[in-house]
Structure formats: C-alpha cells, structure tokens
Image (cartoon, rainbow, N blue to C red; front, top):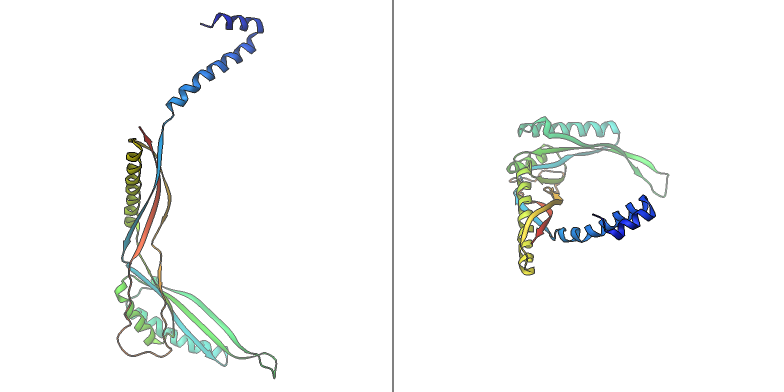
Length: 246
C-alpha cells in the first residue's frame, strides 16, 4: 500500500508525475540489492607449450643455366631439370609432392663506358619445391638432387604434418597453468575459487616452420649424403579465465 503522503501527492499532481515518482522510488530501492548480488571475480591468463620432432621436410632445389641465346639456355636447363625430376621419382617421391616454385628467363646485361648497354646472354632458372614425408630421407634426397645436376638448393624446411593432438595438449597445459596461478592468488588473498564464468583463448600458434640454409657447389662433392639435424618444433596456446570467488 502506498504511503498516505505519497498517495496524496499522487492525487494532487496527477497520474503521470506520480508514476514517475514511483519508478524512481523503486529504482533506488533495487540499487543496493543489485550491488549486493554482484559476483566477485578473479581473472588469470595461462600459457601452454608442447614440443615434438618434425615428421615432414621440404626443400627447394633447381637448376640455373646460362647461354648466349635464350633458346640455348632453355635447352640446357631443360636437360638438367629432367635429370632432377628423374632422380626424385627414383626416390619414390609422388607427383603430388613436387611443385614448380619458380621459372624465369632473364637477359644478362652489360653496361660499360665504351658502349651502350647490351645483352651478352640469357639466364634460365627453374626451381622445384619437394616435400618429403620421411625426414630421415632428406640427406639422400639432397645427394640425389646434386648428383642429378641441381646447382641450387635454397632452403630446407621442417614441419609437423598434423599438430591437432599437440595443440590440444598445449591448450590443456594453458588451462592448468591459469588455474595453478589463480589458486596461488586466491590463497594469498584469503578467498576460494568458485565456478568458472568464462574462458577465452587469447591466441594459439601452430608449429613454426624451421629453415636450414643449404649451400651446394655446381659440381657434386663426392662422399656420404650431407648430415641434417631436424631438431624439435613447438606449438603454444594462451587462455584467459575468469572465476567467481567466495
């Protein structure tokens, strides 16, 4: 029931002012209750990382040829690249794992003081990107490519074919890390962790490709295949968790 004084004011001033006054009164009455029910929270971030040996390797190799004419340079390059592809197939590398990465034909210019710039020859470059699903065969692949006539090996890249399980572990590690730190803060503050209110992934990073530069001479160096170290790669995850505290 409305207070008599308020009811009198309502009757004297009309329905609209009275309704507004009633709404304001209810708002002020609810504000303290809302403040009392607002949950106290503790927020913490966590990081997780897992490492594993790469199971895939890829490399870029090819042939660069020079000749007085473009046709001659192209013919020489084609012959040597056919040998490169033949060597790759003998290693059992499927067509799907070989892809042309670069092909170019460029004139070679000379600019001296006695005459205007002129073309002295042509250079043809043909590069192929090769993927190896067995890292242990990388040394043999490099040796075969050089033996077949490849005079350029630009880089070797290691990767993990499927990092799904590794990423799941990293995410679990990140949650565990956030929880461990939150429990330390809660104990120090004299509070208890309640239910989790939210979990947000701040970012995750898959395995970074590892590159190893490889330099070879135009002529094959006799001996055993070159040693190659694949090392390890890591995946990481970051989370942000909010707990209710009591």
